[in-house]
View (cartoon, rainbow, N blue to C red):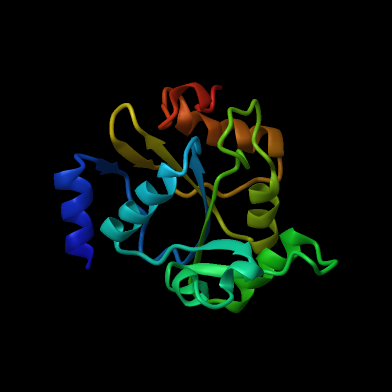
Length: 182
């Protein structure tokens, strides 16, 4: 399957992947920026297939019901009960604790529209789960997926986010005007 994904992503679509995720890194929060279109989902699926590592996402538990539930689980989804009075950061950190491998992909913009700053949920999830953050950029202008080295948060949110944002300088999303600007 990995060869098929690589053929589609590299040969047919002409994309490249710069950087890598060490297979020994079993748990992390992957922040994927910019998130400007539904097309990002397909680029992510193809890049994940070409890389060949398990990667995950969380979604409302209602999506995991029949008939699509099996598909979403196969795609790496983990259901999240949004009706409980449980803190979502704690709930997602608990998923990290329950699983041997959990590489969580999150779009910190929280929307496909242009934003001035990221939502900070990813940050607190990574701190609570005691896992590094891996910055991943989908740069449509160069047809590149750029993967940074894991970054271990210090607890100084302003400094940590400034360091993570550096990975996204000059990156253009599918819808250029919605790209995250530093």
